[in-house]
Amino acid sequence: MNVPRKAIFRILQVSCVVLIIIGLISILIFSSDNNPTNITDSSFFSFKINTSINTESILEVNPNETALYLNYFDTYPCPYYSDRADLIAPEINRLAQMMRAFGMKIIFHTLTEKPSEITANIQTPETELNLEKTSPNLQDKCLYTDFDKTPAPSNGSIHHDIMFSSKSDYFVKDHNDGVKLAHQLGIKYLIVGGMRCNYWLLPFFRNLKLNNIQPIYIYDLSDVAYFREAQVKQLDTHTKALIHFWTIIVNEFKMAVNHFALIDRASNRNPPVIKFDGNLQAYYFMEFYNYREL
Image 1 (cartoon, rainbow, N blue to C red):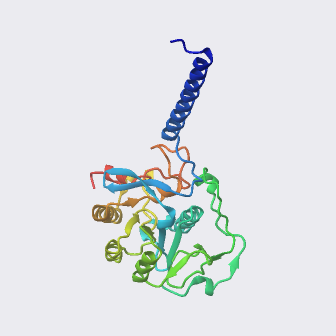
Image 2 (cartoon, rainbow, N blue to C red; image 1 turned 180 degrees about the vertical axis):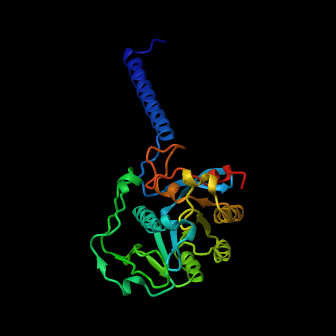
Image 3 (cartoon, rainbow, N blue to C red; image 1 turned 60 degrees about the horizontal axis):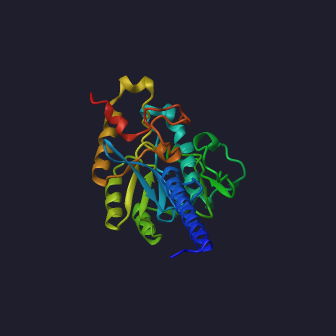
């Protein structure tokens, strides 16, 4: 039986189209597997966490189900690292601003009146964020507009330059209210920083877990322990205590994160963006445990 030439030609045309479609689909699949999702995609936020003292993994969260919890009004400067204490406020500002840029909620535990009720709005911050250096891939600069500045509290706090939004941020008077608010907001991951003596942290985290909220401890933000090259051989008892506490937290709650990992979110062990204070020792949690002589 002879097949007409037109039929053969038509079959070849259809076959070519099918092959082209298959090829395009393969290219798209390959590209999606090898190219990271654009950082401007607000449907997810991923960062490195520590699931044990020597294990890291990538955690991907929904920004709408993630919040940053900051306790700052009752924080005091560490006497061993008083020269670094004033860096806490800029770090909190950098972190909170980037979280807002991704649509995450910020919850402040103030222990006092809502700061926006006792201080005036400012137009230009005294502390610049320098996001171009700390987060060069961040598209939304989330500049200070309609932001307030906390007053210098009389209780010895060093956080005199914490920036917050009186429009979008939340405020709670104690940690129980923080748990209730996080639950009401549908939060699944609560990233917690700004500790004072850490004595309240364990019951607070256990309360979160009881309410199906995973706490993630920021272990270098408020502890103010920075492993600079000059300090590596002179680690004091305060640092040893902090490492012991970090171990307890990560063993029980399985998630801890360095604030540098949140701010820079570098994709390799030697990120091209040097940390704003030049510190490389404190970048990843597991590196603290390289000093076994402790």
